Amino acid sequence: MKFKLILFLSLIVNVACSQNNNAQTSTTLPAKEDFKDDWANLSKYQKENTALGEPKQGEKRVVFLGSSVFEFWKQKDPGYFAGKAYVDRGIAGQISPQLLLRFRADVIDIKAKAVIILAGSNDIAANTGHITNERIMDNIKSMVELAKANQIKVILCAYLPIIDYPWRKGLEPADKIIALNKLIRAYATQEKLVLLDYFTPFVNEVNGQKEELTVDGVHPNLKGYKIMEAITDQAIAKALK
Image (cartoon, rainbow, N blue to C red):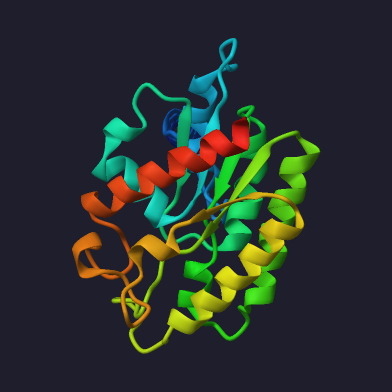
């Protein structure tokens, strides 16, 4: 009987120790964050936005809001952004509703004075059957309305020409981009917004990009970005005057 009691008490102690060890393990292992709910990738620039802090006196921040053309820009020519109040907030692959969702965090909350909106190409490239130029324009218009409500100057972009997407061949996007640019131009005129024409300097005779200005028919090379820089500076000066 005494032996059974000792064995029983020993089992209780072992179970208690095991549970305690499991509890310690569960509290010491860091929980892995799940970002599936962050469809617009708001977390990408969260730390950088915080580090920016409040604008200095006289600082006029200009946000470049777009996808890969903007994100790759600071990689190809970081010197263009150095020493300026230019804030690159491009995220490769993003479509216009994602830019709209990011607008508060990546434009309004960092106290931008102006925003350059380059949107639409990835919507067209997705080709899910649900994307139309009218829906792209709805998202652009919503961003413009948010900017105006927060006294932020808007620069709208006529998108670069694209004859084909290397990763989604056969979509024939050239005419769709031309049609979208026509809508963007008309809306910019209607709302008295600055239009930044990236299409004209890049377009070749078949409505694609000039070979000497691009790496893949979609994204500019350094020479292409240099051309964009000159006309972008002009548009910013016009918007902020």
